[in-house]
Structures are given as C-alpha cells and as structure tokens.
Image (cartoon, rainbow, N blue to C red; front, side):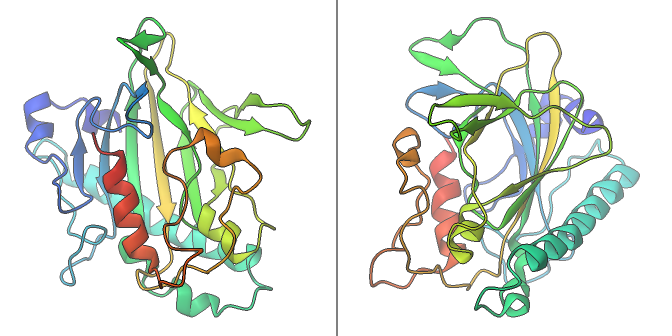
Length: 269
C-alpha cells in the first residue's frame, strides 16, 4: 500500500478509475458515502480478479496498475486477492450452509466481480470542511456477502452498537495478523437476519496516516436479489442514504450485479 500511494500524483492519476469500470486510482476526496454532508479525506485504489480477459462490465475489468509499481508488488496484491476469495468462500459456506439456496451456484463467478479497495486515510485538522463534516468513511453498511478488512496499527474503524438500546460507536482495535470480517446486506437477506450487516464508519486519523485493504466479496453478477423486507427495517436506515437494494420489495426482478453498479456509481462525487 505504501509503495502504491507513495508514487507521484501524476503517475497515479494516469490510471484513475474511469466512469465505466471499477478499476484504478481513486483521487483524494473523489468519493463520499454521504456526498451532501460528509467530506472523506482519503485516496484509494481499486482492483479485482487477476485474469479477466472478456465479458467486461463495470465490476469485471482488467486491472490497471501504475507505471511505478513493481511487478513483485503487483503479484503480491493479486495473490492477496486470490487468497481473500478462498477465505470468503469458506466463511460464507459456514454462515449460510443451512439456507435454502444453492450456495455453490451462487458463488460461481463471484470472484470476477468481487473487489479489493486500498485506502490511504490522510491526517487533517479540524472536524469539518465548509458545511461538511469530515470522516474517513461515512456511516454505512456493506452491500455484498462479506467484507474482509486488513487494517494497520493506526485504528479508526468503528461499528454502531445498538445492543443497549442506545447508539454507541465502538472502536475495532487492530490485532496484528488478523482480518476483520463484516457481514453484508446481501448475506443478511439470504439468512433472514441471522447474520447481521453492521453500520460502521472510519474516523479521520489524528496524528498518523492510515492504510487499509478492504475486500468486498460478492455472489455472481446474475444472482437474484431476494424479495424480502429490506435489511435495516429496525430503523437504522434513517442514518444512511444509499443502503437499500432497489427493487427488493417490488415485483421487478433485480440482479445483484446491476444493484452494485448503481450503488457504486452513487458514491462517486
């Protein structure tokens, strides 16, 4: 991560993420989960399945690496992606093994549209920019099956604890050699709420920049979104602007991949 984000700005911007695919460099401040009210002072980089050669779409596209990144660094990053796919499959099989769904068919091809995003959160002074608050990542729930997070020692990841009936942000302390696992909205739908999709956010670092690797694991593109009550019907959705699966409560059939394309385009500023 340091080798990638330490490159010259113009080198990184040469591989900036395009409007038609989720690959490449995400410039500083280019995304926000709550665009109208929160500034997110971070840069990022998105990449995916190492062997995409055809069937291109917004979520499935060849990786685009900056010129200054070594071949060894590229191999390390792509190997990390492959390992995260296998870890995620094992967790999903264990978490959703008793549901009335063909898990293997649902997972088949999901690695092609799953997504790794590296983030470099930058130290900034103050709590706001103009009329916007400042957060590393706005409060949100993840959308897919699982999210695997590899964080450094800086910290800042928090989840919203509602167990006492009151809202309380609780820090997820970094543990060396470990991954943080978040269930996503789609997993919560599949398991009818047995697996939760927690609201979480990232605080802006106070004294030292923060780098994290965030792997979003998805089912196949053409997996149908279950027609069920929307996740978060307990009232949590009022805090979030973009966390429901459009069409999931209607008679119109919605494919998971189409829903993800709409959601990701919604966070780009």
